[in-house]
Image (tube, rainbow, N blue to C red; front, side):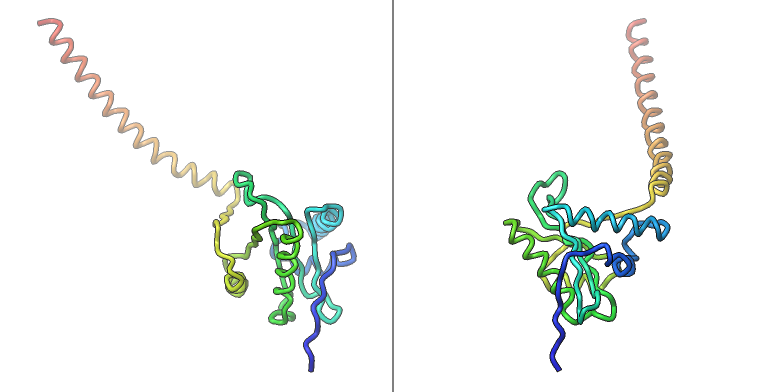
Length: 192
């Protein structure tokens, strides 16, 4: 029996439900209605832009995966052009059937069309299969993106601050003692 072909096409508003299921783990924490509104906005933005594509992969006519492609720079400081292949996800029932390869092939074609030398992607650190897949495509880590809630970072910074203050205070006390000793010596020299 032959292998079914994977086809790619631009995402449409009617793909919303399938994309919500596919990207449930990467969407912002919000109500289902807010997530749907966010994703609909992404679909519309990609459709209206020359520098973005939101592609859906179909396998035997069923949505099997998707990827968001964006022409941007490596970072706001490194202006080297790059195509970001964001959230290339494949539904579990369609893994190991060429869907992921088709999504990344689309990213490479998008980069080639625009004369861009680099393709970048990201995978969650816990996704062993995804990270292995990208490593097989010669994609190595460039940076580690670390994320934490703002209030947690504030708490940790506040925990660090007292330790720094103690060091600064003991250092200041030491300097104060040295300066006081010098003043005393100077006073003794002046009065002699």
